[in-house]
Length: 76
Image 1 (cartoon, rainbow, N blue to C red):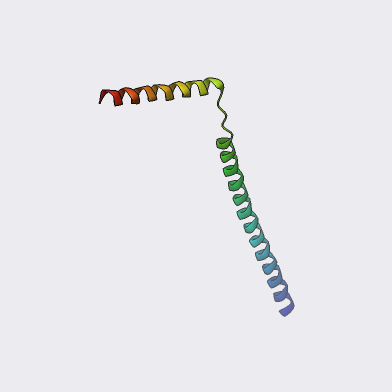
Image 2 (image 1 turned 135 degrees about the vertical axis):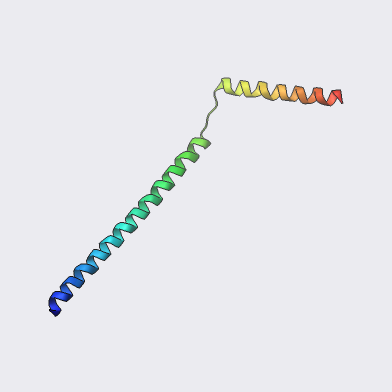
């Protein structure tokens, strides 16, 4: 009985080790996916390019705001 009991205990330890390793692999995979997804979102934000039309529109808006501020100061 001692040999059979030791055999089953070694199988149980091996199973526990495999389950633990699978758990660690899953955690590392989730961490890797999270890191990659956040890196992609920051890259998209950092490399957000404006077209010439967008820049022209922003320039016009800025000029209009500046004109409104100057008019408001002159009216005071």
